[in-house]
Image 1 (cartoon, rainbow, N blue to C red):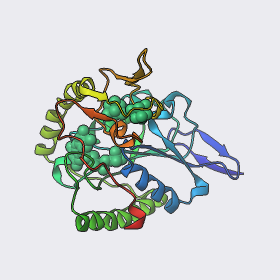
Image 2 (cartoon, protein in one colour):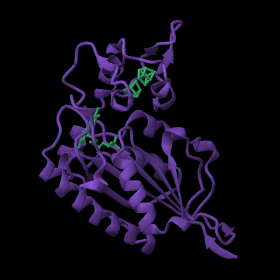
Image 3 (cartoon, protein in one colour):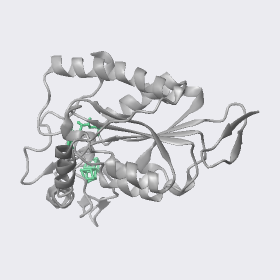
Image 4 (cartoon, helix red, strand yellow):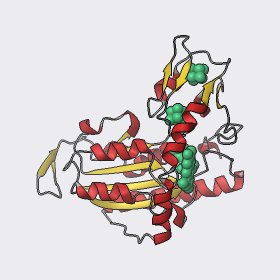
Length: 273
Ligand SMILES: Cc1cc2nc3c(=O)[nH]c(=O)nc-3n(C[C@H](O)[C@H](O)[C@H](O)COP(=O)(O)O)c2cc1C
Ligand code: SF4
Ligand code: SF4
């Protein structure tokens, strides 16, 4: 039996084969999931549990040595689902927590994305180990050109290897957040109400077969069936695009903001690039 020491001084015993690192990922359209799976592989799948954040109850998290939270950036901020989850993580479950935010650029615009989560976790007594931004293809409005996508995937694959090394060696990263990033992070909070309005614009057209995939997978449980067994969208939308891209019949679209989803859908089968 191995033994590990918590930051709060408690000794916790782990049986051989128990998972030591938990990776929670929030990935409405698949980019973050791709990176989370790579990270798990690099850390050693036998040491790691990989959980979709939106379908995990924070109050039932198993204690472990380390927690890694990976999420896609929406308007320079973590999506509401991630913020709510972090607020509910109990104290004292892990020795440290790493935060990996994934946008479409590693630039200063996203630098403050994790700052609110970091503050909340520190208030709960957690130390933050790795805090990184990663870039993957843009998931709405327009598709990036294929050569840029290939470059982003190659860079991200290499960076995941470096992050895995930092997590395993418990090598803390520390970056200074410029004021302009903090301002953008604050302004980005206005996106929340706009995303909710996007939800009321969504509708399922005649091609809908009432399969229920959208209802089951919406991270905010914003979709229900109406009396005619057709999806009805509520006011909790994140504008995450999952229901639109995942509908097998391509039946879901916004009535007005038609430019927001990528017309031809979002293809992120990066392994074949
Ligand atoms: C509503 C919305 C807002 C976004 N805002 C940002 C942003 O502020 N900065 C950024 O770099 N990317 C932004 N993106 C792009 C996604 O963060 C990026 O494509 C990410 O890799 C998607 O990950 P996923 O496929 O796991 O959801 C936004 C995407 C959506 C849908
Ligand atoms: S995923 Fe598409 S086909 Fe299935 S219920 Fe939703 S809108 Fe209808
Ligand atoms: S309704 Fe669609 S776009 Fe809105 S949060 Fe749910 S899955 Fe995402």
